[in-house]
Length: 386
Image (tube, rainbow, N blue to C red; front, side, top):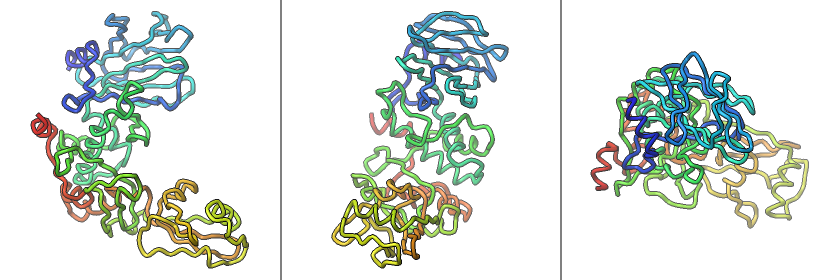
C-alpha cells in the first residue's frame, strides 16, 4: 500500500479517467478559499514532497502548517519553517493513514480524512485536494449523505449510486485541478466514515458495482431526499431526457419526514412576485381565487392566465423544498402546502429506505427508480469498453 500511493503521487498518475479510476481527487473545503491550513496526523506516518524532493516527515507527534504569501505557501513542520512552495504532496505510509485538515483562515473544524493530501497555491487561496481510494471515498460520502441508517440493502443501493455518480462526473472540476468537490454540488463528503460500521460493510460487499444503461454507459445516478409520492422525468427539471430517469409512482416515501412541507407568504409579496410574469394580476389583501392552485399530480408549469411559469423557477426563487405544492389564500396570506424534498429525479432516498425496511433487495430498489438499467462490476465495464 505504501509503494502504491507513493508511485501514484510522484508520477502524477492520479487516475483521472474511468479505466484507471481507483483513486479519486476531491477538493476539500475549497469553498472557504482558505489562506492557511494545518495538517494533523491521526494515525500512520506521512512524508511531504515538492517537485519529487522529500521535505520532511510528519507523524502523530507533530503537524504541518501551510500559509499563503506573495511567493507561494510558507510551509512549517512543528513550528519550524522549511521553505516556500507552490505545491506540496503529503503521502500517507502504511495501510490506513488518517489525518485531520483544519482551515485556520477562515477558521473551520478539523475533520478526519484518509490516504493522501495535496496543497496547491493560487493567487488568492490554497487548494486542498484529497487523493483517496475510491471505496474509502464512497464510505465517507454515504455516511455524510445519510448518517446512521443501518439497513444493509439500502446502504448497498446507496453505495452503488454514489460510486456510479462519482465515476460519471470525473471531469466536473477538471479545470480546477481535481475531480469532485466535497459539497452538494457533487456529493457531500464531510469526512471519513467513522460512526456507522454498517456503511463500510455495505461498501465492501458492493465493491466495484456500478449502474449502466442499455448501451452500457454509466447512468446519471440522480437522487433526492423525498419525491412526495411521485418522481419526475429528467427533462421536467433539466434540459435533457434520459430513458432511465422516468417518473414513477412512489407510495413508499409517503409519511416520511420529508414528504410534506408548508410555507406562509404575505399575499402582497406573492402578488408582487406574480406581476413579474403578468402585470394584470389584481393586488389584493383579501381572499382571491386567482391564487388558488391544486394540481392533481406533478406538473411542470404554474398556469397564470396566459402565462406558464416554470415550477422549477418558482421553487428556486422562493427556496421551496420541491416543485409540487398546492396554494390557497387565507385573508392576507398565501398558504403553500408542498410534497417532497428535492428535485424529484431518480432515486427517492426516504422511499428507498422504506423499501429496504419492507424486505426489498438493493437491486430491486435500484431497478424501481432507474428503468431498464443493469448493475455490473467496474471491471466488467472496462472489458466491455475495450
